[in-house]
Length: 183
Image (tube, rainbow, N blue to C red):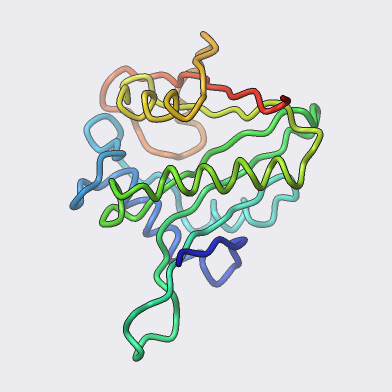
C-alpha cells in the first residue's frame, strides 16, 4: 500500500534525482519528460533545500514499502508540491509533480493528484481554486489534467529561465490550468 507523507531534509538527494529523471530523462515508461524541449536539470539540491524551508511551500512524497527485507527504507515513488498564495488564501498552486519513470502509466499520478486535492479540501477550507502551469507543448499532460477536472484559463506565462530550471531548446511557454474546488 502506497503512503503519503511530507518530505523531509533526508529526502532531498533522492528527490532531486527523481524529479530530474521524471522531467528530463527518457527512461522506461516515462511519458512526462521534457527532454525534447528543455535541456538541463529541472531542480538542484540547493533549490529544493530552499523550497523545503519556505513556509508557503509543502512537498509531499509517495512511497511504497519494499518487498526486499534487506532494504530498510521504502521506495520513493513520487512527489508533489503545494505553494500557498501569501496574498490570496483562496488560491493554491500545484507544482514539482513527479513520478518515478518506472512507476508511470500505472495510475500513480492520478492517485497522487486525488490524494493532494483531498488533503487541500480537508486542511485548507479557504482554498477555492487549485492552479498549475504546464508547458504548452505537453498536450498529453494537459489532457491528463483536463480529465482530472482542470481547465485552461487562457492565461500563459513565459518559461522561467531566470529560475534555473533548464533551458528551452524550442520556443515554449507555460499554460495556466485551474480547478475550482469551492463547491
